Amino acid sequence: MKLITAVVKPHRLDEIKEALQAFGVHGLTVTEASGYGRQRGHTEVYRGAEYTVDLVPKIRIEVLAEDDDAEQLIEVVVKAARTGKIGDGKVWSLPVDTAVRVRTGERGPDAL
Amino acid sequence: MAPAVMLAAADAPKLSSANTGFMLICSALVMLMTPGLAFFYGGMVRVKSTLNMLMMSFISLGIITILWVLYGFSMAFGSDHGSLVGWTSDFVGFGGIGKTDLWPGYTIPVFVFAVFQMMFAIITPALISGALADRVKFTAWSLFVVLWATIVYFPVAHWVWGTGGWAFDLGVIDFAGGTAVHINAGAAALGVILVIGKRVGFKKDPMRPHSLPLVMLGAGLLWFGWFGFNAGSWLGNDDGVGPLMFVNTQIATAAAMLAWLGYEKVRHGACTTLGAASGAVAGLVAITPSGGAVSPLGAIAVGAVAGVLCAMAVGLKYRFGYDDSLDVVGVHMVGGVIGSLLIGLFASGKGQSDVKGLFYGGGLDQFWKQCAGVFAVLAYSLVASAVLAFLIDKAIGMRVPEDEEISGIDRAEHAETAYDFSGAGGGAAGVLAAHAATQSKQSKKVDA
Image (cartoon, rainbow over all chains, first blue to last red; front, side, top):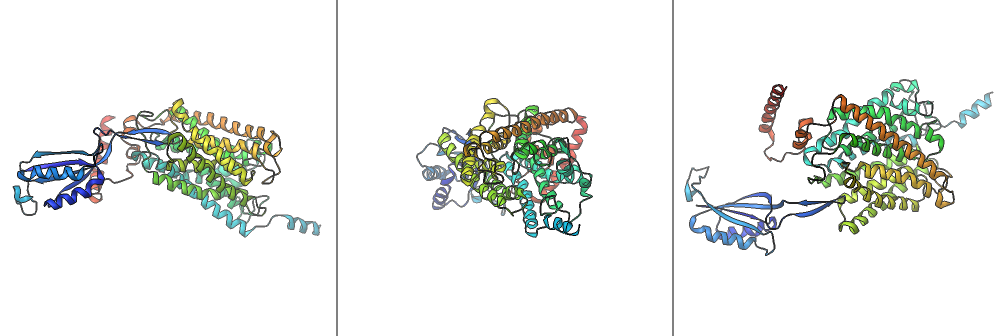
């Protein structure tokens, strides 16, 4: 199994969710995150004082996938998240040892 | 004899239900300004010191109310002693005031005048708190409020408004508190911050307002309450001066908000909500001393000048390196000075008195009187407040320890946090907190 993590622009969340549903993904986890990459931050002005805000709001999406589906799933996420502008984010995957469905105790791919 | 007595009785003002009702409503409006100020300031600080900022204003509602009843009203509005301070023993504890006794020369009971002025005494120390954000011990602040009111506010209110006070006798015009409230509080803020120093990370860390919606809410409440503050200061509506003040309050505030936003748009490229709120408050401050003396067009001028100059003044703290955290000096002191001095130029002679300013053919007479009032109050408040802060710092320490300031004054001083970001909230958090409190007591013992 693989854990696919995507840190992307918040306003792309709906597109990504729909694309994943169309692909057949049954569940995902979303957290609000903040950070920066090449986009860096932005400038805000308060009573004339300019502040550089380093950390930009992002959404982190986590999905567990079977090994065979992982590559394709990453492509789905990347396609749905892309706007072509700087700051679109990153997607990566990690191997996962085990997963358990809490209610039934099913393990491995059955738990997805 | 008899006809003379009857004549005197007919001439003496009688209690007016209309004016009394109006003044009670105005008192409630001015009371609402202090919570409004708490939100205006509270939204401007970072999350970790929101509650402390709110409490610095709210504690004034407690402390000053009691001081005012015990001796404050007597010091400010009692019989004059040496043009410097008042004292009437009947006013002590409000003990000798009958419920139908009228304030001399007016149609409202003494109680009504006393409670109206009480609200002014409450908000003035609260105004200072904005400059001291994030870093002052709550006990030190509370002690400062007691001493500052006693040594600075009560006497200065007497100078400016008390019969026999030197500024009052000189003819300094301060309709509703440009000098006694705003310059006084702004100069005090400057005096205190010069003693206690900057916040950790000033000019280095971003210190963004954590909630601009709260700032806007607070500014709205201030604007609303300010009608009571200003229009009520004439203590009745029988000659139309109070209503003129009401109208000018709205006009100058609108002009100042637009002026601040215009300055910002040109200088920084955006009209900000903080700019709108700050501009409105700058306009309210500037029209406070002047609204009874200027015409409606004059009010536009006063507001516009205050809006632009205060927008420029708030940048000075970065140049000179004093941490006027929420711009009490830049908005209240500068706005108060502008409003007070502009009376000398824009007094129309058709408002509260026939005094005319320079632009209405009155020469510079009134301008010099305004200067005397402004700079005397500014200097006295600045020096006295700095000395008070210095003494309190020596006695019990003004500032919280640096680690507590960094981790957040709310938790350190009030054992609370403003917002629950966990989502879990509820019971489990309560148990943990109780446990943590016990532990921190133990660790303090170990430290000692």
